[in-house]
Figure 1 (cartoon, rainbow, N blue to C red):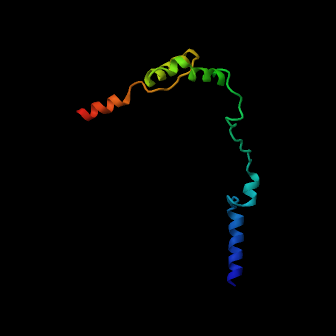
Figure 2: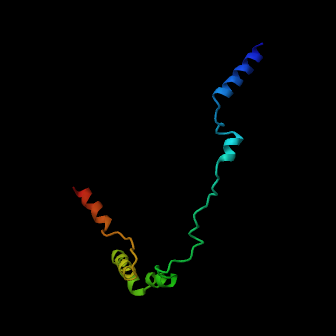
Figure 3: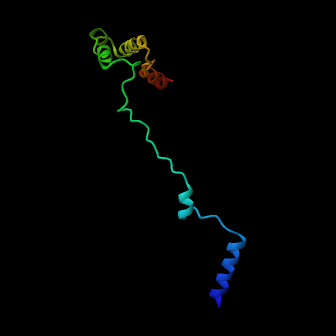
Length: 107
């Protein structure tokens, strides 16, 4: 008897208040438009940008005997100046951090 009442109630509810398919039902998933996921192109597969210097040009900057004879801070500034002539921002420390640390300890 309970089974008959439950079936009748579910039929009445289905007729009076139809429901949408659930999120995990086959009907709902079939109605969804699936867009294929495209991975971003690998930076190793893209060609070398023409705006950047070639490997040979960068190697010439770093292997310059005149620049390598300079102290470390002047050497970094020379690298930055050489890359600036090519239009590239070469990040280098602008101040010797040893002097900053020594001043903080003295205070």
